[in-house]
Length: 77
Image (cartoon, rainbow, N blue to C red):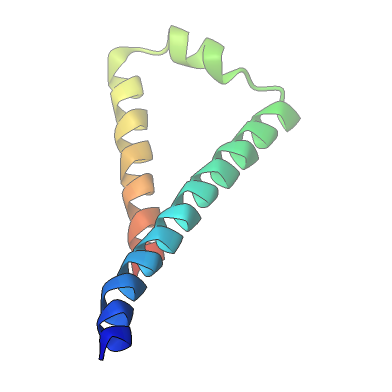
């Protein structure tokens, strides 16, 4: 009986922990891949973000947030 209770309590917590770890690893891999693409194209993202107008930056940040939410959703389903 106590083993079943422990299994019911800890398995969901372990599952969520593994999924969050996978999410962090996926974000890190995505960031590294995008940085690698920028270097291959000799594109300076820092210069672009400093020279961009407020609307372009807000669209970029909104899309980045949406992408992170989609990634999280795909990992948790």
